[in-house]
Length: 386
Ligand code: HEM
Image (cartoon, rainbow, N blue to C red):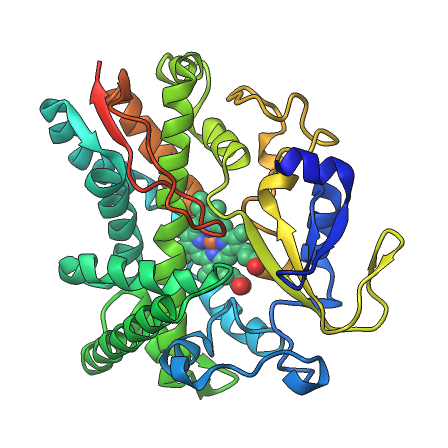
């Protein structure tokens, strides 16, 4: 379907969804870097100026948790907070996590290999990814099932056509999550440790400390973004390997490094299908299609990643593909994924452990998609060793 759409139009307006959809690699890439577009408009435009709805006060707890999220902010607030967080995500500091990530993957996968069967997401990918990001932030693991549950409910707000029921569930999750993070901030303030929550509590920018609201939003976005996409990359990617055993053999036999293979996983079946931007100025156009100020633009990552203008035989899953890393999976521009170095380490460590402990596997049954589009993943993935 995405192929048909991409080849018939580089950009089109969808009346029902009231959005412009951008389909090709070159355009998606340049939109991500275009400062005439913003993830938010509220720093420069009033909602009534562009006919955008006001934030529904019934979901106030959810908006509060987003208020200082990197994904909600634009400069100068975005620049200020991002600089602080970026200091923790340098390639070198993340590289130090490679060994521990590998040990953790092996600890989880070895007993599952003995059992001979697993549901990859629940038994492995979720506990693995949540442990990696919690360790990095200094968040204890005793509430990890709550963290997963809050996150799953909250990210439903990024989908199209959110029902009141889903929004209520997201709002309640946001309220509980904030309360939990506030307690954690209190504990770290009283007794700082060598972790990222303590660093955020103690940080000063231009002599001023961050407010608790800013720290809460930052911790929540890091925790949520820090596992949702990684888990779904592992799920979508392992499914791709199950369907293409020859490609998996190349990884198992060492012909292709796990690091290189993980780029193709993200290109072939990205865990995030779409991100949106608002048009902030009057002079924005894609090709000869002018798009008015206040319009919403949806960037189709999945479509861009299969663009034949960039990738040869784009519908083939090919772990030897030389330019797989040109995928759009981590975004670009000022909001480019800050956790990409960590995600790359996590995925490579994971594939490395999987090839050691699960060199041969097959599907127990055909997996089902969750039904969500933006956060693109599987309900579960049951595997058996063969
Ligand atoms: C395979 C895994 C991952 C994928 C595919 C992914 C993808 C993305 C994408 C596409 C964006 C940009 C959104 C936009 O432009 O609107 C983004 C932003 C972000 N990601 Fe990731 N991500 C992954 C893993 C992670 C991890 C492990 C973390 C850990 C902290 C993380 C934290 C973030 C944060 C905080 C942002 C917001 C950055 C900003 O707005 O300045 N991500 N991610």
